[in-house]
Image (cartoon, rainbow, N blue to C red; front, side, top):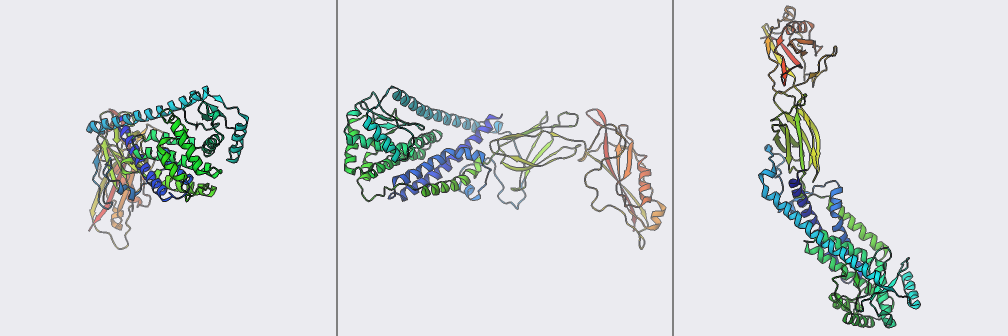
Length: 568
């Protein structure tokens, strides 16, 4: 595998996903600002869709078929394309010889490797930080003791049912007296309270339970963890971190709305929240995967929102959620499928050119043509028959391989996909030997004379009939062998000359390994029989020097045209 070329492709893919993520977050920012008077749950949904879309972008981009957008491509011209595409489709493109990019630009390849390694190191660091938070939460939960007060257990169960939570929610008291109330987990998330919370007032416990159960009902912990994973993938992108912070802030505001909707007075709620923020530990370094009750960074905004009576605190309807999901998919799918110019490169295309005996064919010309973009790329096989293209634009190509002395190889459709390595080996066959003989005599055609010939010729070759013999190989191009060493000139039949008959006789023959024409036959049966007889009679006496392939004689097909022409 060519790691360097794949590094450039991977880096272009990462840059393209980052640009698309920027576009998604910008739309989320615009919508969130426009919805500042709407429920916090709606803004939280907007940011959730944005960070989840950014997270699944790389997966969708690798699975969906490519869509090439001209408008988006023009808007992103600041990204240097791997190959310059022709600007005018009507102009004739010049063939371009592809060289190995590893040897031509080692600095660029090394830079791509270094940047990818830096990204991977940052990804592992953020992911390790998130996993460490999981272990710390699991450790604290394992050492916590359950809250067994029956009245509060019943209160939690009743409140859970009112929020649509169909599973029991355990409540634990941690050993830390200053830890924040929090919840974490997906399948059976617990509520962790600090030691001594059993001595809290009834109002405080009711508020804390209402807030944390709202987090559980809304599955906020899951969305926040997915946002943290987006931060791991795009750790270098400040807007992704901003989106994750806004997601956390809106989740707290949405839960505040749920608490206020339960009948608790805003002033009472704000006082309890402020008291807890003062008395408990505000540090969140070990709680990166948790949702704490009273983070000081957002208290001022939360106080302002909960004391503002004009803010809409209604719950989201199912119709609103479905509409937001449909909007997100209609935006995400085409955005993931679109390919930017720097992203539109295939990894590598290579192969080996050989002859029918299996020997390598050096210096064969390999031509790839994209008829949609009028782009032509060329290279040649090396001493061992190997050829390769690096950094080709992805798309559908026609492949031709030509070499003097061999028939042209044609593969009409080869699909090259981004970030993939493809290969195709080629076997070149020896080419058809074409001979043309002109028989011209004076005496133009008379009135009502018959003119023979083949209009349009014979396409391809005709398999000769006859007993099985040595393997015959079709060859073409400008081959000079086998060479005629004895050639008898055909004689114009007198009958045909008198009748004014002229035309072309097309003969097919197999030149044997001793140089004799074998299985000679006329391919255009509509020609005059006298002309055919004269042509066969002469050509059957021809002798050739045998054709050698790697030192061994072989049989080859030949097409011979005998032109009978009456001069004016």
